[in-house]
Image 1 (tube, rainbow, N blue to C red):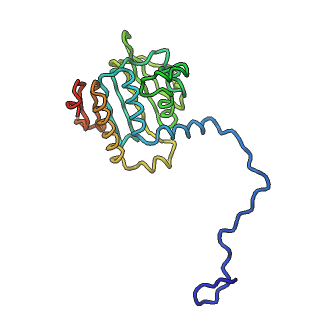
Image 2 (tube, rainbow, N blue to C red; image 1 turned 90 degrees about the horizontal axis):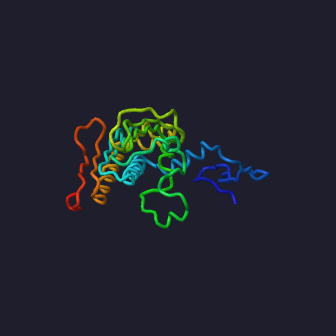
Image 3 (tube, helix red, strand yellow; image 1 turned 120 degrees about the vertical axis):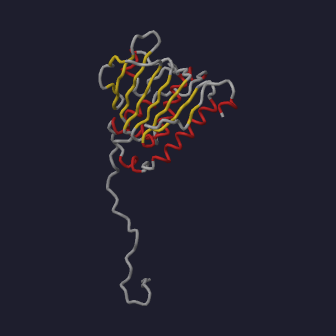
Length: 237
């Protein structure tokens, strides 16, 4: 049957959704380049700035910190800085700190039966280095000075440099998603992401009353979240 449009004497309409010619052979299966694999995996772990903040704060809690401070610029796209007073990172561990599946939380599969830490897969820091510029400053108990080192694509960019440091660890993530243009465009509303980070820190403060939390925008003198370590959940609220 011929199909005509309206009252006009149009030619019969062509069939829509004509199937494209099928290839004669199935497409070849190939291994993805490792850098592509790592970037895809990173995008699954760190979906937006608040994801990075969550992972970093959980690491700080696992380090037995009593004070955790978060500074954010442009909703976390320009800068996320998390500082804690935890036990720090050993100098000898810095070379593999940001490699995938390196962790201090477990060593055997059986350890999963009794694990009590916030995280254990060893993917968070590695993921951040694939989608941002990561700098770590840390000092452990008994050291006369701390060390600062930067990471890119899971690899330490240079030997750790001695520096002045206060107890614990500070991690800076700059230019998040600099190499994922499409992802970055969807996250241009920095006010929305900052509110998510403030909400996250508020929840941490209520559930972890033995830790003091603060969160503020870069350059601001006043914190939008500020709690001190307490024994009362009501005080934290």
